[in-house]
Length: 229
Image 1 (cartoon, one colour):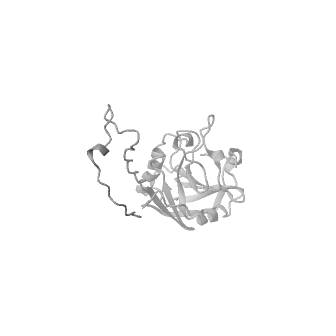
Image 2: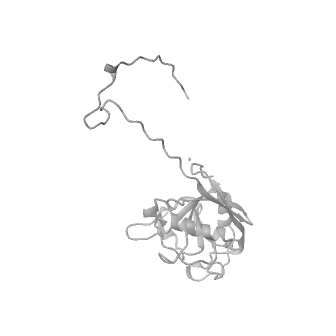
Image 3: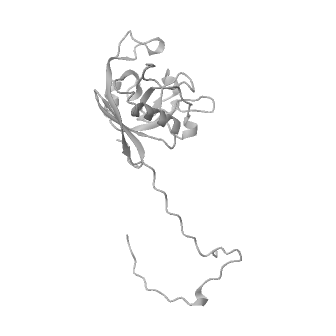
């Protein structure tokens, strides 16, 4: 799927071995630098377990959608979303837009729609070339008009769409998490009817009618090794 298809406004075994007594002559001498001889391998450090991702459940009128947020890879964008969650600024908003490019590909959009009572200041753009994330099936990303204008509107991708990622000449959009439960809900919303007249410019015909209310958005925790569903 290419960028041209989209236009956005915005995973003890112990062996019994005999002990052998070791004499002083068995002990290899240290090297001049004090390092272990080449025949010996220093102990390897214990791998640091992955930090848990923040999980957010969006309760919608069509069912729950559970997100895992990439706070380490996309700290600015994930923190921005959590400000909306913690401030309950998404409660009472709606999924208002669906873009159906072809069967199995598209996205749905929700957020504050620039409501001054809900919307926070814009944030810096975190391109996928910096975060290492991609617009894969279930990714959540920031809606924006241009880099540095993203605020309180978000979209969830259906179908792998790397054409939305940043390149050397295009800033792309800022992925900051992914759906771990509820893609059936996402697809159901994407296939809902739209108004033939609502929406301006390229968004005409993409506005959901009726919209899908967001009842609440709340935090939980999720191990970073938990697979998507």
